Length: 80
Image 1 (tube, rainbow, N blue to C red):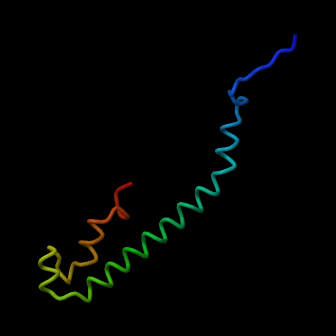
Image 2 (image 1 turned 45 degrees about the horizontal axis):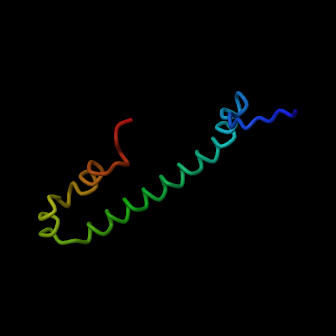
Image 3 (image 1 turned 120 degrees about the horizontal axis):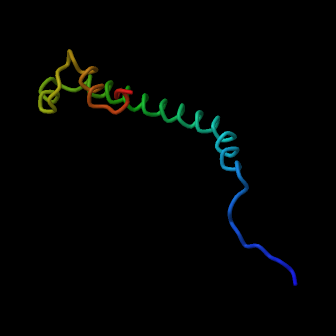
């Protein structure tokens, strides 16, 4: 009689090895996501800097504090 195991339990330490092997890819992915988010933020600043003072006032923004106000609203510059 033959013994057959149908266990899906991975070998000990295999998950840690996979996490270690994928760490550089996660770092690269995070970098590109940060670049994309920074470009979106810059585009928003550029777009709103061309808006009229009346439009900015409707949005609760001032031209002289535009970048700081947008940074405060953004999740890019959250506290660590």
